[in-house]
Image (cartoon, rainbow, N blue to C red):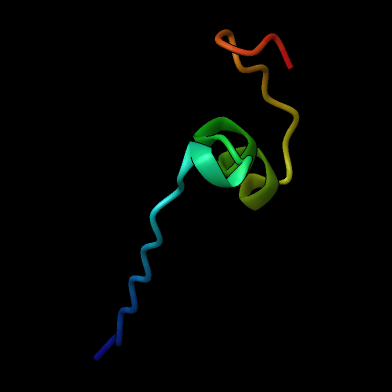
Length: 38
């Protein structure tokens, strides 16, 4: 029987991070945020 684990965290723009930046970091990929242009 497999044991699954799911962990979630909220991402706040006020802390200086964007959801796109956090996703790119976790995936190890380079993503572009159309809102900030980065």
